[in-house]
Length: 594
Image (cartoon, rainbow, N blue to C red; front, side):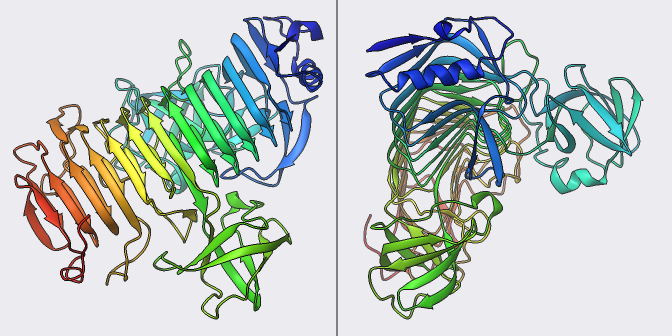
């Protein structure tokens, strides 16, 4: 192993000078060494975009058509370790901290990531009036009010506020029952008046008002700069990293294999007074394969989900000839994604049911532009394949293990899992504003695939999930592909979901809401009542199954007033063990024991 010290390139810890060029030179020197380690003596290091390497990337689930300025440009590196030794990496302006592109066997460890001026801002509600509320904004979040609009000022950027998330000052989480009620389209009704420096008044509020003393997180800017972008890379580990802020997601990976996050924490910066971390998801994986392992991680107060693992459903725009189709990437944040490569296997699906009906092997892909590509197959396609169907690449499916992680106090849900690989979720703690675990599938908006086929959810604690119900989920575990199965389709979308030995501490009655699953087991789970939030509607079913078959419910410890479940139109008593081979009325004669 060879050691490279960043100080040998003219940068010392705790200097205010820009370390960007020195880091570039150090990385280039590492190319000439066998298994190098780039060391940073413990301290603070600053990075500005002015002299950074620039490259255009279409980063999935981020805003596209942008050139990115990169502080750590790891391009086609092998066997490299970057060891911050507890250092703080402070970024300025629109800088993308790490890009790992075409890399193999890379470890980044022992550092924190933050911005001098975050893209998010924060204030405190100090007064509420008739249709108005007043907010105090600290000096660390500079702003101006122009023509009734609140505009925040940063390092090299000026962005209008586009929405608000209300945070409970006592729980340090999204306020009970709020969700996005002040966000997105709802925000457009407001007019802002500056009463004094650092104090503004919102006009145009409705009946639902933010609480005095609560914090408001002001959303502005775009998903420009994730903390770590992993592209076409293998054997990647991120370890003992505290990510306090990013202008985008914490980690986003695409078409990469074997990724490990060990003690990778997306979290509030201690002593900062902030109630936010990253501006979007903590971690996100698109069309990855091999293994994804998250262990001992903390995900808190990010402005979207802690974890999302999925592929892409791509609509077929046109059938060109007998073995060529044109596909379209519809969602703007998927533009430019490489959907398939020669030799890979795809399957075709019905857009309404999301059920597959044919396979194909790719011969050639020609990207016409970031939205449209021509895909040619090695064989003649059957006549059944045509416009309005979907394509999914099944050569890229990841096995996922998430163990001993904590997900809490963030906007939206917990873990979003739509991968057909083998999945194990165990010994985690969920306390999400929406569902703790969301298992979905979508062929109409985000186009996120695919159906789960083998998932074990065991020995986890679900603590007060869905406190912003019904904004981001119907249950602690919400399984709801975005299809319309009434009347039911000939088969279920998901399969083989086991929920075993979990602890539910909850004020919300519904533990599991499941739609279109073949084989679901709920066994050995316990339920405890929580008094943290007001109880939601007590008439809701504790377990709700629609269009499902092969259901087993046994050996659970429910609350006395949570003994009712529903399977289709049938009400069941949860005090009894239950085994069903039914998909509403259609499956009474057809089921096979699971």
